[in-house]
Length: 181
Image (tube, rainbow, N blue to C red):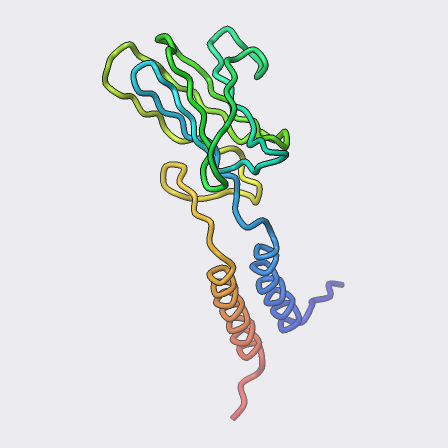
């Protein structure tokens, strides 16, 4: 014999879960790691990131790896400089070829990895921006673009989702009752 759970209990449980979900997102980190952006101008390769935090006066290091190098320690290393909004490093006199740029923050976490092609042409070549795996699930966007919404926006969105779930549960509960005159 099957036992069916009343619809209104299921709807209220779903509504509670839908309201709690945006609230858990509010409790998460204020911003997600933004990855690295690598660009070339002539024989200069530069990398920028906003994913690192300063620890003991250091932001971290970046390494430029050629095709035969497999680890961070083997590459040409440069210290990250900048401020909390943006850190950068650059290498000059880079020969033509394909390179991999790896950024490791001072806390030991990898901010991101990006491949770049350096050509001997004098025209600047700009590569795409790469993001590491998001820390809060899948991040949508166009072309890898991400945007971190503030607590007020997430709270308002969560309230709208919660209101919609509660309204749907109320409608289904009203519909399941027999018609009254």
